[in-house]
Image (cartoon, rainbow, N blue to C red; front, top):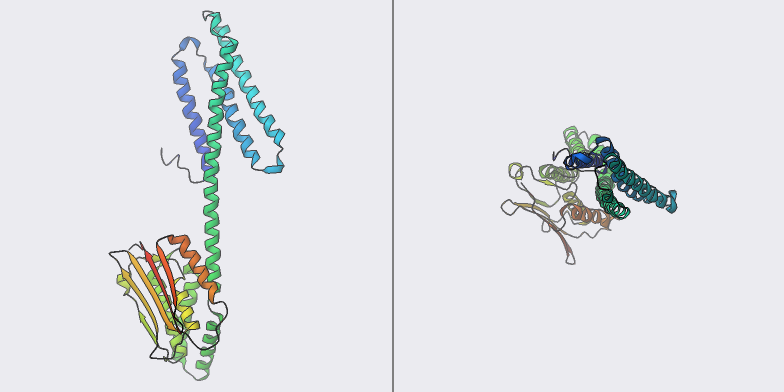
Amino acid sequence: MRSILKVESAKDFRKVHIAFWVFWLALSAILNFSVKEYFTPGLFLIRTLFVNICPFYSVYAALKLSKKGGNVSYWFRILLLLLGMAISYGTHWCYFMQIAYDTPEMPQTAVTGKMLVASFIANYLYFFLFGLMFYFFEDLVQKREEAKLAENRRHAAETAFLRAQINPHFLLNTLNFFYASAALGKSKELAAGILKLSDIMRFALTETSDKMVLLKDEIRFIEAYIELNQMRFENKLSIEYIAPPEQEVGRIKVVPLVLITLVENAFKHGELHEPEHPVKINLDLNHSEQCLKFSVKNKKTSDPKERGHGIGLENTISRLQNEYGNNYRLSFNDSGDHYDAELIIQNIGS
């Protein structure tokens, strides 16, 4: 029963409407059948359809139409409510008059004008409020559904945007390196470089289509990025890289292209050729506390800065906030000639 009435979207409310009226008809039939002398199946069904359903769906439909704004006039919605009330009262009156006619033994004083009006008002308000409740509950579910769709679209746009942030200078320099290697006949080095670049592009363009990726794949991406840069500079870059082995990482997942953004910023804006001031990249996992700590430290380069330094970071912060909320901390320390970035994610899972 729970799976049948599970409401995940506004479309699922059709099942809720059907289930509600089936339940109400069954319950009303049982209660009315207990008074056999006044129970007529045909009249009962007509009364239920018009007296109960009219107030329910008149307010429900009027509120639905109100969401369309100027396309449906205010007076048309008022007319719809009044029509529902008129049909409901007319059927209510005919129902009791027919019962009084079909049952001569019923006391003549049993059906009075005041009693009819009072019972109608009580019944009308009852189903009017039901209609209101169904509308606002459905509207809430629909807004949540729209918010979820908007969030998914925004995530897809942000990820696509971040893919486009892969440094074009890095790609251009890598292609220049391949050209030089080919010109010098370094076929093995060229083949290895092409393989690394293909790994990087495959991960950036395909693996990151999901909201979360395996941490071990993100680590491989970082390692391929570092190795390809080392190949470009004949292994003369000063990089200290520490990460846990793959078996220790397990099936932990993270937001894609977050860690590489911090690494790429260090390569773009850091000094890479001073052994006494290496770029330090460290990834640490604390399984007992379900905590990931990732830090990148570098000395600032004296070369002119590339434009767009803050775009990738702003995007990264937004995506971290959306996914982790208060379970992450991204901090930066600018100490003159050095720049440190540290990301801590809590409740990382296992």
